[in-house]
View 1: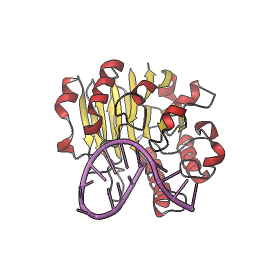
View 2: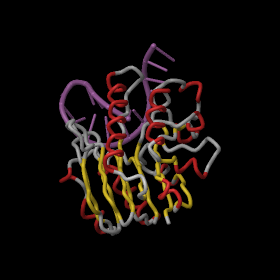
View 3: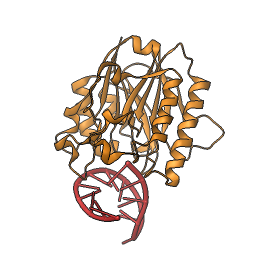
Length: 255
DNA sequence: ATGGTGGGTTCCCCA
């Protein structure tokens, strides 16, 4: 089973690139973030014609997440499933086959100390509680998405420049480590020790041309899922060419 | 310290 997580930065703007990617990689499950459209604006027909079922949690202008799958998508749910109202469409979960998925578009946070930064940390705490409530530790579980956090300096093209900046602060990395401590491993890092592999490059600095990027999109896998995983790669082809997203897809092979 | 590009909305926000 080939699975993908990809922040497409508008599904409507990115539709040609998404269809091209689906045709080329033929993934079984795709977790999409930043759809930037309401449910009724989602391009249902071309996605179905490409051979995919889908479940979407859309939102106008910002956010929006979705799951595509060649097989049946079971038990879908939207939002963090707690007492707090989900004002932003950032979470969708479902089961495909024997694997439970959680698709996250983690709050960006703007900058360290900003009110949105505090919201980001509180939001990640809610994610941890959702995992404890709903995701059994012995199941095959895949947590994918745009986490907007680097694990360590190997995930940063210029660590000194980014020291304690957004995506790289000690507090954010600690929040991510708390998810890991619940029993989930960074699947990409399981296979690749060296730095210099990124999933996001800033449009504004033409970062992709210089490989000045960050690794902020991740698959976190339970032990049962990781055991069946044979590799994780970044699809750089999707980041080049005409009108790409600022994120590249992360592709994992599951048994 | 700042701005650069890109997507979507609306006379600007977010990334």
